[in-house]
Image 1: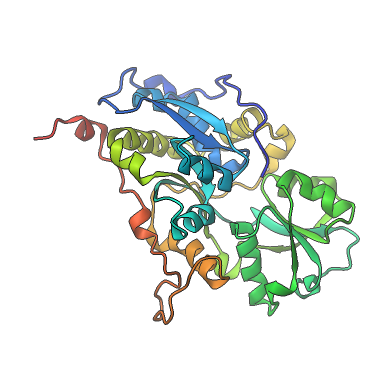
Image 2: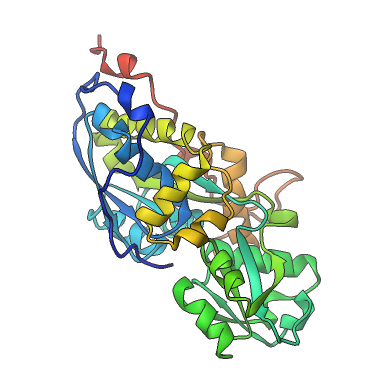
Length: 337
């Protein structure tokens, strides 16, 4: 996925910040936080919280730090270079399953919907259906990522063995050129790159990867090391509260478009057309288990030998990784007895 080349602080948002209290209710253990971000629409609530003063109201000074993508954020979290970071769920779950480090998911980030991620081909391509991808080169942002796994899942529902496809790792910003010049036969695009590709009129849609078994799948979350969460409970709760307030503001599309254009450097015309899905406010174990089960289905992480009907497929149970909702600020600030 692409880097955010410039993280401006021009205060694009206004309105609800007028009634933000100037002082936090409680004392946080670590006021200054380094938070890993990259140029995807999933990160919008963080910038809303910054621009509307929600972090400041909680006593936090949040510094967005650009990463090369979710796996890079997870690596930097494990190394102690970040306090919190955003990634697609597979990067967190793969690191947890391999015992790279112990993580906690602090808050949910984004959930898929129709149109957000699509497999696309060149306009004059002879590829017309999923089965035509057998033996073809298909670009993904990385193997074992949510786009790779979701595309494989949809192919499987159409009777196509994903192992018969040649998966090629290419950064999202380079996929359109790869398809147009014939370096790859197809690519799995995610927003805003879906809209950018469609605007060129040189590509066409093959299928949506958030369909069938992957419909509305959880895509990404904000995570931290378990030891950081344990050592800084008031700090993490303050971050959760600020992000929850920001999620409440995501129903205002013009404000999101300001974030996309101003912070993520997406072309304003593209920003006005981007498919916007859901920014969940709560961490639901059953929903967030789905990416882990998808990973187990395709051998990225170990699977259980004989799960019963309706039981999780992955050995990894994500429920213990999910952080509980924060207490209200007044309760969090109350002295212990």
